[in-house]
Amino acid sequence: MKPKWRRIVMWGVMALMLAGGIVFAFQPQPLPVDLGTVARGPLMVTVNEDGETRVRDVYTLSAPTAGRVLRINSEAGDLVTAGETVLAEIEPIDPAFLDVRSEAQARAAVQTAQAARALAAAELEKAEAELDFAKGEQDRVRMLFEREIVSRRAFDDAERLYRTRKAAVGTARAGLQMREFELDQARVQLLSPTEARERHGPCDCVPIRAPVSGRILRLFRESEGVVQAGSPLLEIGNPADLEVKAELLSADAVKVRPGMRVLIDEWGGEGVLNGRVRRVEPYGFTKISALGIEEQRVNVVIDFTDPPENWSALGHGYRVGVRVALWEGGNVLKVPLIALFRSEKGWAVFARDDEGAARVRQVELGRRNGLEAEILSGLDEGVSIVLNPGDRIADGVLVQSRD
Image (cartoon, rainbow, N blue to C red; front, side):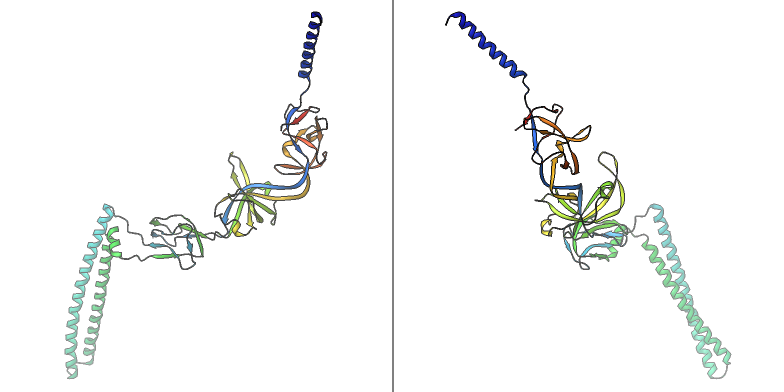
């Protein structure tokens, strides 16, 4: 081949390659996307919320009287028997320390009581002397009366005088005893807490026994100390008799009815536990959310329907996840929620046609939960749809699976 034709062929090949590269560079390329498939399957519409386990009947043991509760040696989880297990003991409170003025007043009261006792002792001695005199006078009058020297009136006067003096001795003796008690009472006011405990001797305690059989759930106080009447000491319950309390938004609680099925998950164990709604409480309350928003909440009480051995690891106050089933379907045409987007006519999806292009398909939705939605019309089973469509995807754009 002549050099001239060789150069022509070489430049022609290079021109064709450059033209092919330009055509290939400007040719539309399919966008990589995540694809899903419209399929039939089970769909459950639920109300999801965090719940908390609790013992059905919790008994709070309180101090029946004010006093010093001794150290509680029981621990949380210990078994107790109704009417037998002594859980706490309360003894009297020690007297308070006296300030300078109170102590001076107490010492003055002791001195007053001592003087009153001395006075009562002197009155008793006087009464006894008058009684001795009346006794002698009675004997003399009796002897003269027997000899008929004095009249019957004189004898009766001597008898009356003796009996009166005898009663006066009894009165004086009782007065002396009363003054001694008053002196003891005044001296007691001077007792210090240490002296009071030494005089008291062994504890004259009030025992507090378990009102029901079960286990100790929680100790409010363990160490020895002074408590007031009604102060809570511990809680008792049966951990095998658990229920779940969930605080639902009032807008969700109105949809819940007793007897609805409940799925209990995120409880730390394997699998999902089953439960059933027992009661929707009629009273709502205001609760501040983590974002500082006031919300109206309603307590929903749930019973476990699984055997106790399945949830025996749970205890009082454990956190669980609660899903109340409002509606269930077994053969529902559904799509993931992440495939849906809003259009001018409502909800729509991007469906991939046989040529690999994304086409906008208007759909009518039915029931839905947080992951999937029921398709009433607009799609058929087996259609490939785009998941998480971005702003680069439009009607007619070529797409391909990211995988």
